[in-house]
Image (cartoon, rainbow, N blue to C red):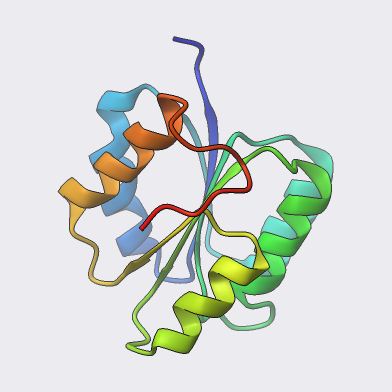
Length: 130
């Protein structure tokens, strides 16, 4: 399996490192950004296979991060995450181009399962996973 390049974006750095630890066995090349504005700049310079982004962040929200990724890497997989317990957040994330939406706190087993489905070709960059 080729190494997938993943970008994790969340203003909660402690949470980000928890996610990185969980996906380590998958062999991803991970980049971590706690500033969404900087993440958008990075997306314009580098290609990523996977984006995991929080929705509610200062400066630029996760919807904008997803939009930027779709402009630069349309075939990439996107998992949107949020602690906002609101169905509209999920719907909007999927409409903006996320392949999956997972509520915080994440069920790490489910998170790894969603990534595995994406990597095994059972979804493409435009299909949502529930």
